[in-house]
Length: 325
Ligand SMILES: NC(=O)c1ccc[n+]([C@@H]2O[C@H](COP(=O)([O-])OP(=O)(O)OC[C@H]3O[C@@H](n4cnc5c(N)ncnc54)[C@H](OP(=O)(O)O)[C@@H]3O)[C@@H](O)[C@H]2O)c1
Image (cartoon, rainbow, N blue to C red; front, side, top):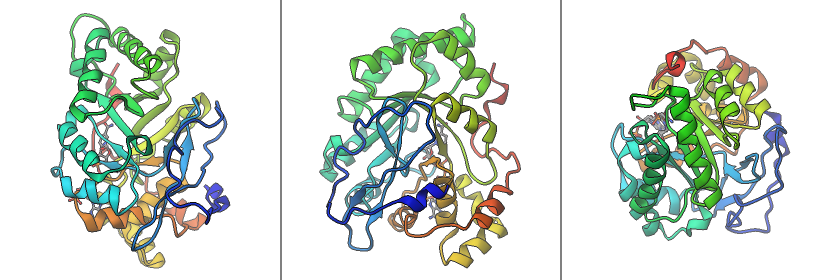
């Protein structure tokens, strides 16, 4: 997205990320625009982390750090990302089993809670009104925080027998709406929801999800869903931006990386960002975290953006919700 060309760096502020993801005027269904803030002053290079506005006016940093359970967890890397790389957005889930450790790392970093964007997710075993409320509060307690910036329904299929998927999703969503109104969640959303999950939810509920987090990388581009979310005022967030490492063996991506003298990871993260998609690459290695953050000082040409977009082959590297009713 060429909107990125319009970024202006405010040289006067230092660490002005403070509260930048707090309220800004609500933008409803307008296209995602990016506002710039300097996430931190660092020894190697400043990380410039733009934000994307949600329909309730909050600003989600377009770049975040994933923490999924595959490949382990590293306390040291989380602290490093926060204190040295300027990362201010962390994505986690109860499912990843690191809530307590992550809370400890965040406290150790010394970054004030109000400067951080923290996303957590509700696992299907906790669906249903009472269970969802309980699980969210327990997750807060595990992490030692009072609120989440974003809380997502992780997957569209409940595990509980009895009610239909649609009924259970609506009942669960009602709990999230209350958590939102109570301020325990500053924004609420879904993950892995397709149009046939979102449309009934819209009929059954009062708060439209602020975010839909989906698998998104050059091999998996659900552009129809992305456009739908855009029209409905739902921010589209992409997970597994490196296709869990599969992008590193794609010759086209290697060639483009060579052209820009960047790494394949940086090219793929940059491609997501230029498409206006919030992206959350995961690494437990310091050097890679630093590398993945360095994506705001170059721009992919339109022709290379198009080449990368041409790599879509419908491949899923995580899970595929297509057949979930
Ligand atoms: N909502 C959902 O259903 C859902 C599903 C999947 C993921 N997610 C979220 O999205 C995040 C990212 O997705 P992901 O973890 O599946 O996959 P990913 O970010 O596409 O790829 C992670 C893999 O790439 C490696 N890696 C990272 N940076 C690298 C670099 N610069 N060079 C070489 N290798 C690199 C990592 O290894 P090392 O760690 O060893 O560096 C890891 O094996 C998750 O952590 C999670 O927070 C959400």
